[in-house]
Length: 203
Image (cartoon, rainbow, N blue to C red; front, side, top):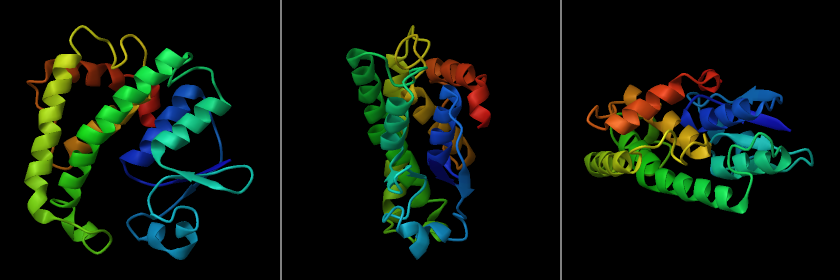
C-alpha cells in the first residue's frame, strides 16, 4: 500500500489514524497548493481531485477518509480505533457521520467560501454569500456536541476513536483559519486538551 499525502486536515486524519494503529507505509506528497491534485496523474487516483488517496496492493485506489480508515482497520483490526464489536463500530460510525456532516463540512466550506475563496474559487464551485451561515451552523452544532460530551472522556465514552480524530483535526484547522473553538464549550475544550497530548497528533 501507498498513501498519497498532502497538507490539510483530511490527510492528517488518515496519518493520525495510522499512527494510533502503528501502521507504516510508503508515502508520496502531492503539492496541493501547486494544484498537483487537480492534474491528470492524480485524477486517475481520485477523479474528485481531493486528498488523500490510498493505493492498494492490487493497484486500485481508495479515497474518502472514512473509507480509507475503515479499510485499514479491517486489514489491521488491533488496536481497534473504530471498534472491535458490531456495537462499537456502529457507535463510532454514528458519531463520525454526525461530526463530518454537521461540523466538519460546514466549517470547511465556511473557510473555502470565505478566507480561502481566492484559492478555491478557481478549483471548485463557491458560494461566498454562504460562508457566514455555514460557520454559524458549525458553531451551533459544536455547542450541541458540547452538551453531549458531559461526563465523557472521548466521543464514544472511554474509547478513543476515529470520531475523535476527525473532530480534533478539523477543530485544530478551524483555529488556524478564523473559526476558533468557543471557550464556552468547556467540555469540548477539555476534550481537545486531552487529545492534544496524544503522540499521534504529530503524525
